[in-house]
Image 1 (tube, rainbow, N blue to C red):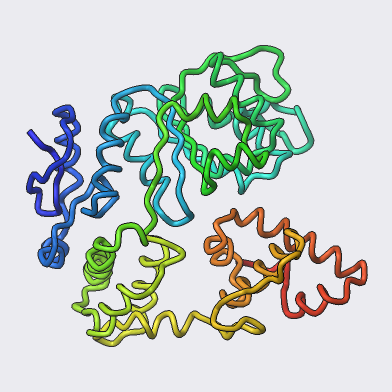
Image 2 (image 1 turned 180 degrees about the vertical axis):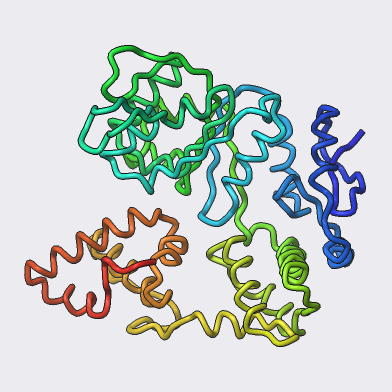
Length: 377
């Protein structure tokens, strides 16, 4: 029996999975009627909160349902905005430990000084500000799943400590004299190519092999073009349901959906639909939404950045960051997503460039004009 489901609950070509997982698919399939109607123009398959019927998504569903019932560690790779955390949570939901905790930690959002305490916990008085005992992510996820997003932003020193926990199941809270035993399934994710991350020194090879028992690559939106329009309709239907409206896409929006390159993937599509929905009275025009968000790019012709042969890699990276920051209107969160790096990495680069400004780097001073490194996203 094939167990893939569209939003109507029809069985469509998915791999064999356990009965409780079939029930879980049905339970997740209770969408409002208009969501089902909107999807009737094409076949929309889903796996939890993951939508799409392209070959690459059907392959992804198959991998999820195969690995979910096991205790294997999983390494998820994919560009920002592709839904890596949704994949991790779906693996947990379809696992035998679905009733146990699912704890997520973004390694790029925690400072190197605090990430050990966040992962393993700390005892009262172990450092300044530790006014009480704190359970770390491993303890809170005991028996369940710990999702480590942006793994390659973790320092090499912390990667060594993480590797030891994965190998022994034992760890110590910061300031503790005794070790604790824990049984946790670890799912990690990165927006870098894992092998390149190893080659470039962002990921320890031994940790890579320990985590990639079952690697999963999440496809970009560009690789699943047939899903774009159906996804947009699902997002619009949800907004109509929430707001009690009956807005529809304009005729030009369909052409826009097929022509735009979607550097921010599904997250960008969802946000753009929401922005266009807010701007629209009745007809939702996606081109208008990106027009309102896309700034004028200074010093970049045809949305391209060119570098002369012989340029230093650091200089090329610097020019690309500033050009993308200008393209995104100074929005650092969007800039980080487009560049495929964490927000923390982007801030680190901007801080480096700012320090050069104070060292009287005249060329960089011109580029930094109008860039507020410490402003919000």
